[in-house]
Length: 231
Ligand SMILES: Nc1ncnc2c1ncn2[C@@H]1O[C@H](COP(=O)(O)OP(=O)(O)OP(=O)(O)O)[C@@H](O)[C@H]1O
Ligand SMILES: [Mg+2]
Image (cartoon, rainbow, N blue to C red):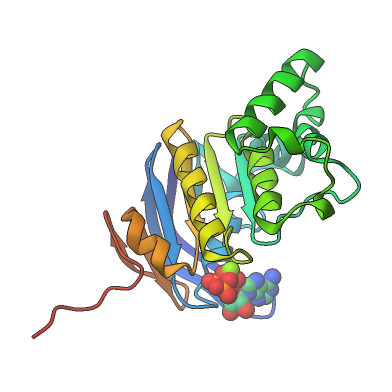
């Protein structure tokens, strides 16, 4: 599903955000990306949805080498992905239904198909009764659930989440992570950058830890921070 080989990213201000990153993520995997602020987590996610291009190395997502994507191909490439951010990024003047259906209107889905798929996505995130509400009438957790419904309404093969619980209380954060886990069970590969130690420690999924732009740990059933053996 995802292969990175010798990937480096240097921004125009000469900041080295990633260097020498090798990584393979298989279809159906659920991966937490952890590490201190500035470690390169968001940059890595951004490479995967082609928000930025690698400076060196290869990034292959679902068989597509993202470097070779032409401008007009980026949109159709992203349609197979669902991306979720810390700050939700909802459209304030559209209601919940319309925020979710927007992703399908863009691809000109037939109207019947559209309402069925939006209904299913809202049902999955538990927001059927809030379909007519505007984002500013919702709690943070509800807004994030709308963002998740929007991300999954296209049945993405890959869901990328960048600190999806960064603005939420512990209880709501747990609900959101469980939702991502459910989405993973339904077949989407999930990569989630997070600082949420307690949830990572509870869920025991694959954990990739980054520091200074490099992967320093990759564990199958990992925890947030590796405490070395006690002597
Ligand atoms: N667009 C950009 N232009 C220049 N430098 C950038 C840009 N985006 C990120 N950086 C730099 O790249 C490095 C990695 O940033 P990144 O946002 O990937 O870190 P992060 O691990 O997501 O951190 P956080 O946990 O705070 O979100 C940092 O030094 C950051 O300042
Ligand atoms: Mg970040």
